[in-house]
Image 1 (cartoon, rainbow, N blue to C red):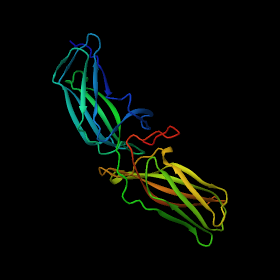
Image 2 (cartoon, one colour):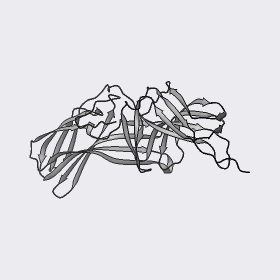
Image 3 (cartoon, rainbow, N blue to C red):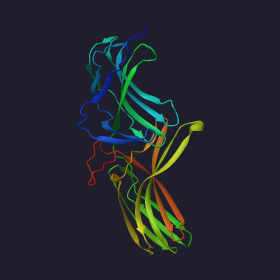
Image 4 (cartoon, one colour):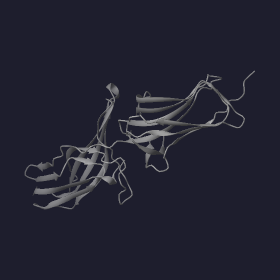
Length: 311
């Protein structure tokens, strides 16, 4: 004779202070959905409540209830994520859950050293998972629920941040000099610089400053490196003349940027570059790249005048 039909409970996770803390909207292309995640600092406690709501008249026999804080790196072409943090708190010893119950949890000692990231091929995520462990009965086993958070980390200002000059030239036709006040920027910084036209014998119709993001990772046959243009800023529209000087003033807070990730757990990296593009009247393109370093000055930066913050 078959046993009673299993009616799974409703399991929900509520983070402490979720209504008042800032949030990050994350679009998951693979799932075709957008999630709004609460933002936590890397050294901030992750605490809240787990609610288990039973159906009327239902009860659950279980072999333990636990909550975990997990940090992992996922590659979208690989079904085996890499876990670098796994903390467990036992909520209930084996027994029978007779009524709806709420359990507090607190991962106050959890150090989250890496920032969250959602890229082209890789995703670094932190999430809380609740598991009601059960004996497998009629192909019905554990009950699980996950809820993600978004982690950001403040960094100290770079010690060495000198100005840089770049030259773009075609012999006897074009000679330009770009000057930037620095190459290391925080995410709400302003890019300041100048363009000097030292020699102009071809007709340039357009010039722009782009920011490229290069994501690289994987190993062996799964090794990849992808470029993505994350910002474009028009420097000039029209033909310049010799000795002309054009100022550069670009607000980084308008764009969706992350800090530079030189090496995340040996799994992937994210680097940024200035890419200066010149287009002449024959639609020929001339490029010049310069690597830059991005860092987070504040864990909770102020809103910009456009109401947009680069998280």
